Structures are given as structure tokens and as C-alpha cells.
Image 1 (tube, rainbow, N blue to C red):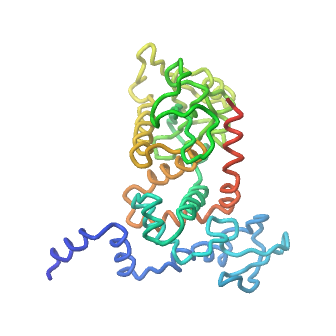
Image 2 (spheres, rainbow, N blue to C red; image 1 turned 90 degrees about the horizontal axis):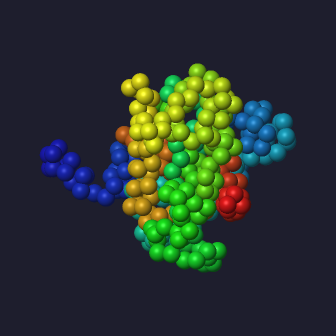
Image 3 (tube, helix red, strand yellow; image 1 turned 180 degrees about the vertical axis):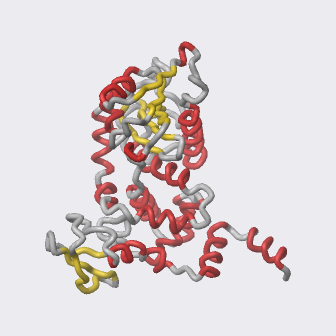
Length: 340
């Protein structure tokens, strides 16, 4: 078998098997993928997950994981404390799950292939997604675009409905204004021209200045130029943060100003996001929408990556609040409903 025949044979393999073959050739094991945080703790690059102190020392092992004890708060922790892997009983299957997740396999196919319960597959998905952070506003620079888009409220997967049922994809009956309704979740998307991206389920219905402040966790740098539509809330946000603001009024057919100021990048992201959610998942529950925004954002970040699995695992293990955020999904959803 020559090189071309071998290459063709490899390309005919499923994506998950191609990834396994690549890992074998590179000599990469699951332990190496999951050891990134342990190495950071050994090198004092990260702090205690309880108090952030970097004054800690090795303190035995716990179920095969390295344990540490913090001199600041006197609490013990392992390399996985607070991360989405914390408490998993089947850590040996983590990298296989990530492979199938990247490949876009459904929960049914993942549970069948891995021999795990579908509820377990769902929980693993949202534990991972709960770990994916959005870019904070202070990292953005130059021209920053921001605009909102709307998703019909969905209770997909729920056994009890708090509203009248409708066929998936159909609009709610009380929608009187295009794009704005109390039964729609408003997602504020903010991005600069260098790829920094923040996506937040801000509220239901019309957004306010306070929603924009919440969505962009940290104030934009004062030398940033904010480009938005004519929504008055963005003007208020820009004034409060002393930002130069370029407002584009669609009703006056203002789509580009001075050849560089526009929100076309954000509109493009809106279109790709909705297509991805509709085609990949046939819509998602509003309860989990923020998690899927994090997934979309990391997909955008990892485009062209030669090892998406390693980078996804590395990014997700940096968040020691992941497990807490996973357990607060219901609370966050109830808060969102309270904004109606």
C-alpha cells in the first residue's frame, strides 16, 4: 500500500476513528489530555479553587488524583475540584465523549456507542458547556460591534409546559412586533474585528441598558469604538462608559458609515448561529441556550485547529466554577423567566 492509498483509507474512516489514529501516531494518551491542570498546579500557574491562593502543597492522592492542601484557607482539593470532570465516575471515557461531541453526534448515538445512559450523556454535555467562558469586554479593542437577536422561548425536553404548546419552529401567537416579544429570549452578541466574541442570553423581550451591562461583563476600553443599530439602550451604555458610539439606523438605510463602521459581522454571526442551532439540534431549550452559545463561540475560536479535542479540554478545565454553574442552570432559567 503506497502513501496515496493509505491516505485514502484514513479519510474513509469516521472522524472519531481518524482522531484516535492521530492520537496513536502522536503518542497522546487520555492522561496527557486531562493532566493540563495538574501541571499548572505543580508549576503554581493557577491558584486554589476555593480562595485562589497559590500557597499550597501536595497532600496525598484521592481516588487516583493528586490532592493538594491550601495554606490560605486550609482546605484540600484535587486537580479536578470545581471543574466539569469533578465527580465523574467514568473519567476513562471523557476523551471519547469529546470526540463524539466534536463530530456532532446526537445524544442517542453517543449513549449507544459509549454504552452510557442518555441522561448521563446530556449531563456530560452541559457540564462541559458550563465550563466554556465568554470573552470579557475589556479584552476587546478597536471597532466593536454589538446587536441583539431573538430566539423563540422553547421548553424542549420538559415534561411540564408553562405555556400553550406550539409546533417547533413556529412563532408564538402573541407576537405583534417583528423580533420583539415577551416569549422570545434576547441574545446580545458583541464582537471586535480580531475575533473576540461575547454572546449572552440577556433577557426576554426588549433589551435595556442594564441588560447590555450584564452581557458585557467588563466595560469596554475607552478607546474602543462601539458600532450598533439605533437602539437607544446602546447609546446609554456608550455614554455611561465614555465610548465613541456609531449608530446605524436601518430605517434610514444606514448600513455602513465612513466605509468601516457597520454591524455586518454581527449580523453574519447571528445567521450562522441560528442555522447551527436549527440544523444541528432542531432548536434548543431556552433553559440551555446560554450553554449552546458557549459551544458556538468555542467552535468559532477553534476553526482550523489541528487538535480541537486538546484545545477544548484545555479551555474547559480552566473553569473551576463549572460544576457550580451546571447546578445553577435551573436557577438561571427561572431568573430569565422573571424578566418577562
